[in-house]
Image 1 (cartoon, rainbow, N blue to C red):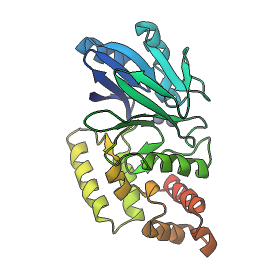
Image 2 (image 1 turned 45 degrees about the horizontal axis):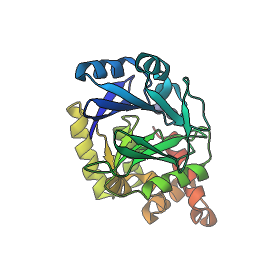
Image 3 (image 1 turned 120 degrees about the vertical axis):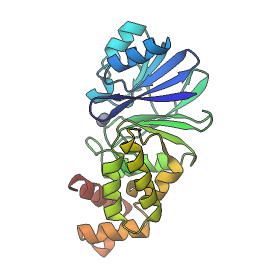
Image 4 (image 1 turned 60 degrees about the vertical axis):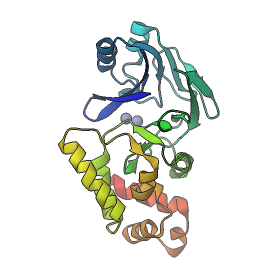
Length: 260
Ligand SMILES: [Zn+2]
Ligand SMILES: [Zn+2]
């Protein structure tokens, strides 16, 4: 299968998953770049997947649905601006010869879902919207830190060769924060250098690879002693709070929110 990151707005990627002459688009915040890509390669849009209700992920859904008749799938607990099939944890959809598994990942929004393709080749693929970014995670707008941590835990448990299709190019700014949290992490330093090179060439840093994220992403490493220690120092956590995974994670997210 072929994955294309269509840039939109200032830093969104609309992911187009292509198989032969068929395509599926994830989170089309804008219809224009998708219609352009379909026309350019003579593709038929088979389906539209939506991870959460934010406008930069749904703004083009209605127009694309009208223009192509593609079926829309979206989170059961959120609104999508077109007729859609609601999906939730445990659901599986068959699309373009692939099984697409739905994972509930509340936190960024209350009903956010992710789509996982366990049998994609050459590697499993995850479309995670604004839940997990390379080097970071989504802001917690509607859920709680406990929910976001549990959501990230369920994504972290996927196969380590999973290709993660995040919805924003936030990598470099995330890595700047990650380096402040873990200045001694050599894998993080090497990955940062690689991502700078990619961005200098105008290339997306995505998809990210889960195995690498587990080495460099502080939000997937909130239980690592180095991260825990750095957060405790920064936020002045008590000895008791330092042993509370959710308290550490919440303080880490708060640190990032205020990081300049
Ligand atoms: Zn969002
Ligand atoms: Zn977004």
